[in-house]
Length: 187
Length: 187
DNA sequence: CTCAAAGTTTACCGATCGGTACATATTGCG
DNA sequence: CGCAATATGTACCGATCGGTAAACTTTGAG
Image (tube, rainbow over all chains, first blue to last red; front, side):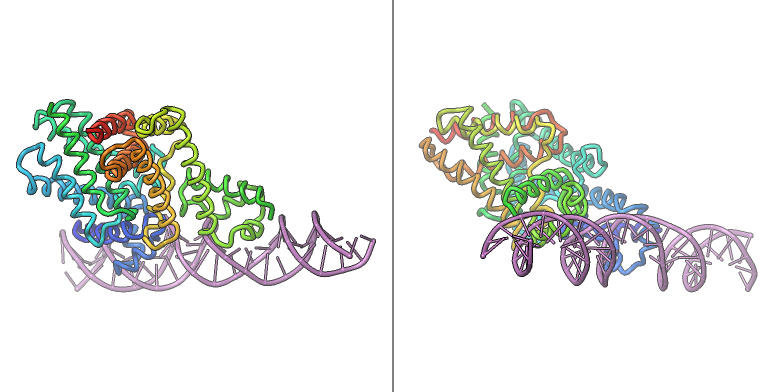
């Protein structure tokens, strides 16, 4: 049960769950893809739910690390980073493997608010919002909390619309709206 | 094969799919709930996918009718109706049966953009956006198309966040942002 | 080396999946 | 009424679901 092996399984499972969905992906197919046996899989993860939770933990880490770093690379100032989030999202949307937000999918398939998978999805969003709040505070913007929540709405909306792929580039629309809201918070 | 019977099945299936998800709901349980036999069910709907498509058609009709009417009831002017959409959403979020957007769930579980269920979900959003666009045009707002897309982002984001239930009332945040964006379009 | 602990494999479990063949009621038309 | 067409119910299909018992292979300590 070396950690690297386990991580490898989680990484593989992440890709398959992200492409195919959670309920639609059977443990058998995951086992077939990774090459290990089913019993070994169940030694690493007691249940499918445990595996999904591990996948979401990895996804949370990967996504937040990537987004935060990209926001920093794209802008120096805190307020600029808030805006730059939408440029980063635009880059994500353009990637061929983009399939929407994994946590939205997870909370859609496990809807009960008390379900661990649902809670973990909510936690992910809450951590993102907190990061935006801290940036807004550092930028000395008015109503930092409300602004952070509004930017979250734009972000989530953009991801949904980008996934539905019926319109050009929702990241640009979201960015324009974000600029307007940030400007308003400066007054 | 009276239409009323079929509609009754679709209505029942809608509730179950909305509560439990699509893949997580088996045809057997739908059959058990409605009291009819499996063969009769498959006489009305050739496949599960057909049933889901019928469910989404009904949901589209119900939801758009309800939202459009509520927007009209809450505001007389076109620009006011755009804002009132977020009050209507707030009412929806407060209902005990609220479980997020059925079309987001559908497109999450059937991700392939070429899949009929995915396409129908995109169509639903596109029709909503068109309605917002027409209201924005009637209100003689600048950049009506862009504004409509931005309001859609706020709407979708609010539904996602409301479903995750970690924050107070996203409809209020969305409404404030919408007011700011509409005001900006007036200049 | 010995030998037990840990990890892995094969083969399988009952339950449920979407879907159907076939026999039985029910219906509308002459 | 007679009787075919239509709708329904029973019983079942192979495939797959999440998960496991038991045999086998590898490994590390003495």
